[in-house]
View 1: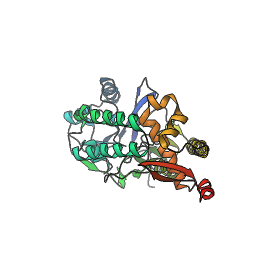
View 2: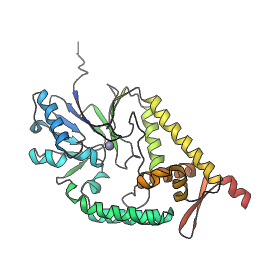
View 3: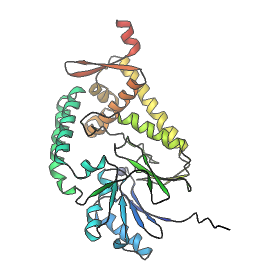
View 4: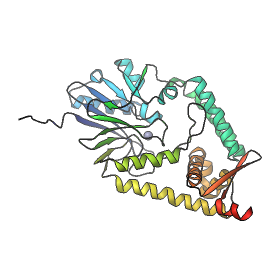
Length: 330
Ligand SMILES: [Zn+2]
């Protein structure tokens, strides 16, 4: 009789408490007979590094036993320790192809990105607040130079480690991937789904400088996840999520609800993304400008894709109106 050895790998979660609303920074080691894969690499802090070393030591392992790193998306709280680990042990780093320019902090790409946000905030009617954010972005490019990943990056697609399938789940980041084990029904998915907060679909240009409809992408990724047989989501922050479909539905419903509220504001005559953001978010508009603008533009995209609103460029600023209203005017 053939013995089916199902449990052919072990997972060691590394959960580092975080003071922010993220609650914790999570990354994971996957150990098979032949490999020790690190999924994500936390912040670049001594705390995260020590948590990794402690988890390894508990299992009689060291940094030198890690055989490869897989990055779920390019955000700084998921790639922090990569350079440090690779300086101790040169190992392959697997990423989505769209991560490469971002992780290398490619100069041309970052310049294009600043250009993109300059025009975007103008088109959204953000005025001075938009210009301030662009200045902040320019300063960040300088400040974060040293965070560029030094070693070579290998694109990851299709099957991985026999047990896993790499699945694209763009939205929160354009390069976000999940590792899905169909047998165990386990899903390692970065920040697609977080138990205690809804994950932001941050506005981003594609590699050609064209704006992606990131919230629409995020919703499609959530639906993709909903359609898969998943028992546990291993999230980038907070607790692991069992039977995620109810939470996914809650997240999808809250997009609908916010979109409905924005539609009402548009009907009341608030027509630009900037004015909608100030009315809808009040104080947070100043405190969390880029997040707030991502949320507003994402929901406006959704309303546009659903055929509820349309936009018109007036003196360089997009003005939104509901389709019914337009019908009345014409
Ligand atoms: Zn994250």
